[in-house]
Length: 620
Ligand code: ADP
Ligand code: MG
Image (cartoon, rainbow, N blue to C red; front, side, top):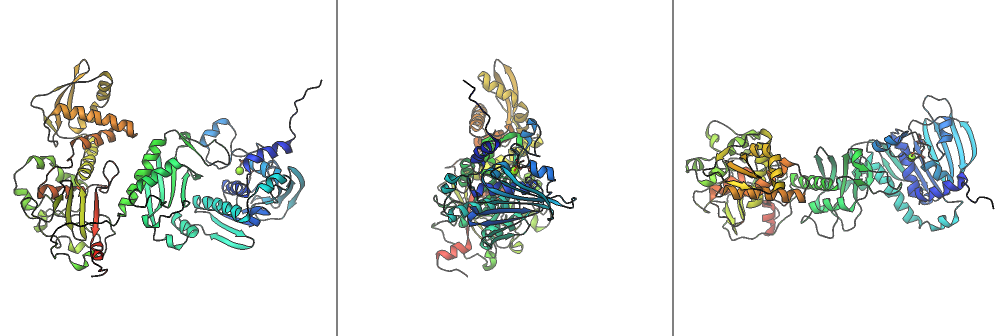
């Protein structure tokens, strides 16, 4: 008997491959758009007829092809984009498989016109079911035009499988939007059955978003940016009020490639928690930049999934970026609030002009004369060094004259009322305008309304930023232990502590090895009120290990967090007015006062306008 195995003819092999690459008109559009972008086009026109079943044409002004390349481009595994397997790990172009044109030509009637700028004549190729019908020189403009006609003309089963025109068109528009969003610097147009659907001019991302989704997005976009050594996140999120009941306007791009990821989507939703209803979906267009060696995009050609080697870090960075964006723009929810307080008539009526500006809080803090006079309590020691801390943050602090006793955080919205609109905090506990609720929240008055702080979250934020600074400057002040405790550790914790010696020292811990997996704690950070140094140190290591399991943080950040968590004020702790004022002042001297360590809010703001609206007065 003769042998049975034969190589498939190219046309059949291509048709099989096409089953993977071209599932529906929109997947062909994706490939053609990506080729245009890879060719360096600055203008791309898309013409669609009958939802792409009759025609998809993509015309670009990119670099074009020579006659030989034009013919070659339809061969399977013919690509100009990678040459070695090593190139696979540094892919920056969209295509690289050299499969798209071959697949499309296997299942449709394709007309290619292409010309390089330097050539006088271009090339025209007709190809149908992988068979070249015509190739000839042609007069044409520089760039490339690919028309794909009658998709699946030779595979009736698949043609019948296509959905209705509205459904296929929806897929086409979605595909077009994704590419257009990723390349706002390129002009794109989309025509369907001779009607213009989009004509997008080159511009900034925000303009592109508005161009695609409509003018009402103009006021809804909040910029979002977080740059870390591992991954950068940039883009826009929608304000909570623009969230929709239907999912959809949510876009992640990794190195400009659209991806779907329910895991990363969760990171965004999580950051929006409590700001939108559970059944609502926030708008976002976020671009992640990451070293290609940390991701695997060599997955299925039409799939939009991606693998990161460190997904948790990416998650954490996205979540932080979105939280930060929401916080930095004071997108805090309107809150229900009722408390039995006699509001004095000390609001100035123009105090409510603008509430929308970063750090508009003007506040008298610990540094007022009353505070200076009072004796140094344990609490004040907790905040020692605070003054220099704030000055180094470059907040405007006047050194001379009357103002010297008043530390204000400048108000961009109402600079003139900084020192006038605040009643002086009264001396003594709880008799001023700042008071505690449930020994957990601090209610404070400011020029544009009320602030309600979560005392523990706020203090953790303050300490965290301070410890981070100390770690950076390696100069945390230390207090000597009267009776230096010996802390016995297990071998792995001992290794951990030895590895962290430098950082611990920077924070103000004085620790020496004591032999046999034990350490001697001779000093602890000066600003911590310690009853039991051993407990503090052991608790810190325990907290460090917990955070290490939960989050992927670097050692310094983890240490700063752990120590902040360990040494912060807790709920249920009674505070006097000075302590409360100090806490508020210090919180707003932070670089990012909006969120605590767990990502929960440190404060909410009740604007005057909201208070007025409780009583049906929209304008006063
Ligand atoms: P891939 O994009 O994976 O390389 P394709 O089958 O999509 O594979 O394209 C094959 C080759 O044809 C590309 O590598 C490129 O050199 C060339 N090509 C395709 N489309 C264009 C275009 N619009 N402009 C210039 N060259 C193109
Ligand atoms: Mg391609």
